[in-house]
Image 1 (cartoon, rainbow, N blue to C red):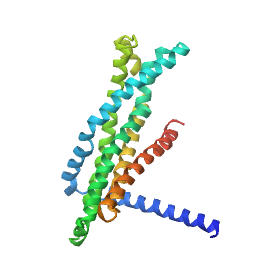
Image 2: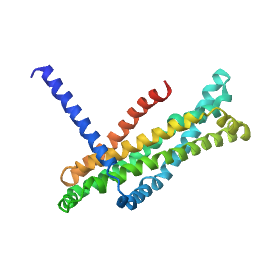
Image 3: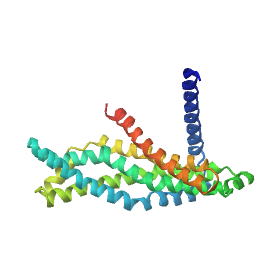
Image 4: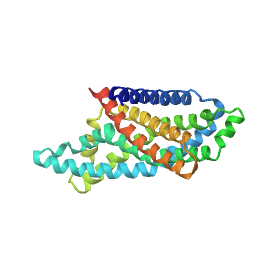
Length: 254
């Protein structure tokens, strides 16, 4: 086969897929209606509140390990005093949003894909279409908006817990004075550091929910189809979060 034709075919297929996902997301975001607010509230609980334990534990241990690593590296350059500032900046800018998004992706993207995929396999979505009900409005829209609202809140809580983890290690193992550690943590943080992390959280929430809904709505028949949809949703959400983090970091801090 002509290699140029093959490359063009794959390029066109890729662009077509990107366009389909973008239209799918746009239809989902624009489908919010007052009648969908109860379902939105339920999804906020499912996505946000029930993800808090895993996000909190991840942030706690990440902040603690980060403090140990920075202190160990700083000893080589007599720069151990920067531990509080770097822990705070690192958690708020990068580790809090990224790790929080990945934990939510592992829990939520798989759950959404499995739930919607099962509805696809059991023809419940076809029944909604038969009843002249838009499946995107009832299944996709609440999940997209719930993730956009919930994940930034989870990121904010994770940032606080992660800084607290660094404080626990710093004051109990590394010899820092508690009041000085807290003062140094907040002295070097800027409002844009916090805002950029929350904006990343909203983008990551959209990616997570969109991945779960997209793969769930296109799940194949049978249990194997649902399994493939679940796996694809988690992988796509994780890769999407890491790629979006690179792009957003370049936009925010270049």
